[in-house]
Image 1: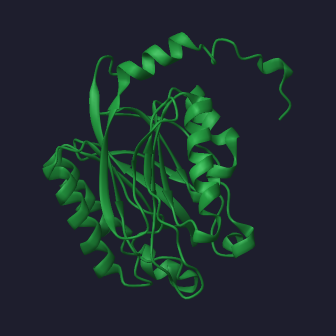
Image 2: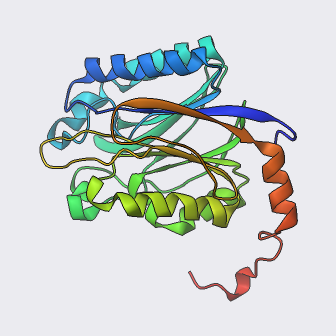
Length: 264
């Protein structure tokens, strides 16, 4: 952990254009450029930000994912910035909803395939299920990733925290109808795991849903450091790692855990 270190984290919230990969890339890179100019060191993009949930064509969009990762690699190196966001991944004829994290030196720090598929929306019919989640060492500290519906499952964030995560990045397309759940769950995950959460949600709408925005950055004590409304925007906030160290020392939740009494 970077003791007595403050880093800048940012989010790029935008209306993901359904199936319009080129437009979405342009929007994302523009947001990254603006945040890079402000000295932001870690940036998160929305879930399936290249194409949206155009489910029947996901395999086609996934073909462009390596090209997109290369563009992110160039920007990560240019700004010494960690960049993460969810994209379709094609592997052995199965499409995964995968969050890729590019480190500040331009290398792939890690990737995470979405574990909890939102069956209510039929995600389980179009995507393969991820199997593992891990925290990765990066230039900004140890970082974990989750995607949208994962936020409703406290076990996955706790797994990342026990793996050493100091920051959890959330990439989402969360509907406006349940945006109060989004707000509450982000704060809860940050407080119960005593870590920073940098969460980005899309705004706008697709054919079936209106999305809620409310991208936000939350401290290890649950303090709201930055929050978007429901329109395209970028936001940043300082993450004080010394605060994290002090808070974990003051309220030693991890030391006081009693795992043998917990049922899975």
